[in-house]
Image (cartoon, rainbow, N blue to C red):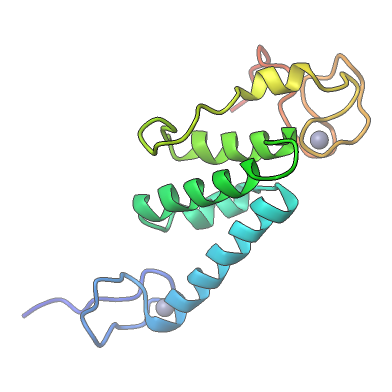
Length: 152
Ligand SMILES: [Zn+2]
Ligand SMILES: [Zn+2]
């Protein structure tokens, strides 16, 4: 007897044997979250850690497509890729070990190269004013000093 398959999100028993590990309701909910995250990146140039956790539930291909779409959209903006765009794209790239070359994209500037061109007394992530010698941003926890090893 085959074991009943349950939705990975809510635990409801899946009636139809679709390829999805989620029930239709959760599937829809996840799709909406995915769209919201895509908007957040393209409009606000923001990618939160909690959003990365949501994205981890998607297939690798979905993430690669997302990366390609947001990369191209952000690169089309006047003046090319903005610093915030590069930071958000790099975050997505590093979280999912994406490879621009494999995806047919130009190489992204490194986050640390971007940081160097920013004012030293401003957090590159939340843009709040900070002291130059801070290792971590006191407002958003952003790692300001690459050599700094946090307790984790
Ligand atoms: Zn469900
Ligand atoms: Zn900050």
